[in-house]
Length: 495
Ligand code: FRU
Image (cartoon, rainbow, N blue to C red; front, top):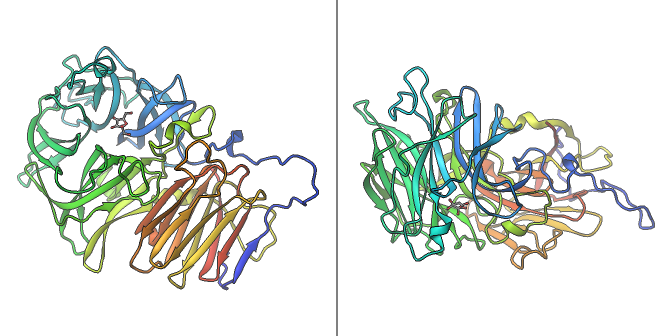
């Protein structure tokens, strides 16, 4: 039921511990393991970073990821593998790609080679092809500059088993240390001819290559040396076609950068412009960020989505290289963000990229709570909240019985998430901080996705997004919202 009235301060005293209570607090932990999220993908154990090889095939969303199974800190990279049919429940599959004599398996992408252009499958059984960076760790310790190069692997059984291409690498290194993270997509020209396009991060810019067979690549153009944010190395690009709200064709180039993000450390910037024959021309030189929170990095989009889905689906690594290796989880480290649908919108003549929560997330809604009701706990660590904003200023505070809190607000044109006192933070001196983002236009609605160790804030269905990981010592119990937030709906999320 939706609460229509506005409240000055709706204080839900949700979980009662009297001051004199002696028994230890029993934390209600999703999945029985502290900080393990319910509906965000985490590795079963070990380390995870970037999403890789996002591809849809025959009803399955594949999500490969940078993975080190032997430790909870970054190490020799493998591609872990999970699949989902609904984007909220994930099945873990065996590791897809192991390091080999050419190196660790760094980030990359996957395509469905329907016409068997690569010859790695057959016309009857076309291959799924992974295009990734081999990182030769031994060579990286020398003065060599050529230890990162692009390679292929293929699968003829829907991603279950993989074989590396014997002709690896397919794109040798021209003498640049940072030369990685190929994102391949298929381009169909006006005359119907198809070619493969590789978007590659090269230190401080992006290279575009073309191929007819995924095996031999020709450099077409480069972009970015003197445009955009350059506080760190460029990584994990993606190039995406969109229609503007006015129906014009535009291309968006995502480029992750580390460090140099707006909240310190890692973040993803994007450019809007035109793309033709390997040349990307930005509309302007404005610096734009995909997510203004500290914890959405290296995100890319799914390939091979059926045309009838008519959407661009994105997921990011929900962490930051500033502290990703030291966050206080035990058997595993890192989660992915919720899947998001990207589109362009227009604010006073300026085009920006919107990230809306994927519609499948609504299937998690198990029960809705009426704020008038006496309830005894925040429904769960996995909770969604939606509220209307009836003035351009609001505050929402989640707190626990230990006095820890996270404060989400908009004031004076700045949207903020304040995690200065939101629980554990001693693992990194930059973690306990207030993160703010400029939003010059009006906020009308907010949507929050809470899980055991994260909050994702979507203002106006993703016109402004902030993703923040949090480690409260005990789960959030109370919710306080200012009177400017009305029609507050709270859903318990369940799988
Ligand atoms: C981005 C990144 C990529 C690289 C991978 C290594 O987070 O640094 O550039 O391929 O992680 O794990």
